[in-house]
Length: 176
Image (cartoon, rainbow, N blue to C red):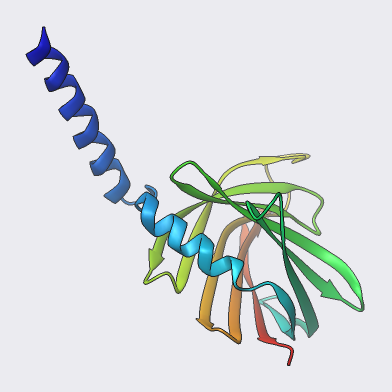
């Protein structure tokens, strides 16, 4: 019986480790935690611009990052003309790094980090979405957060709707 239980435990550990390294799987827990801690360092005010590639829209955009939930979540407010336009909340869910994006399109994609590159580039993919009026409605499918330096970040949103795909690129620098 003891050997049987040991075999089950070893199988579970092997399957879990394998799932963390499969495409679309989660980064290892320590990497997710390290990346989340890096996202926490974004707290403060940022300024920059956005360009909606393919839509010919661009303009100034600011951002504010702050911690909430006793440091368990990071709130990102993207601000146009002094008003929050979109908000993303980053947090850990066990071994997973997650993000919920409160989109200007009126829906809320929930995303999971699928890969990190030296904690500097984090790619998120949509897991599910709330308040989606129909399958063709516009929504964020992917989010990429590029933590270029302590004072530079780039955010890429892949937006899909009505069979079309476009990318919104946001460049931000920390206010001094």
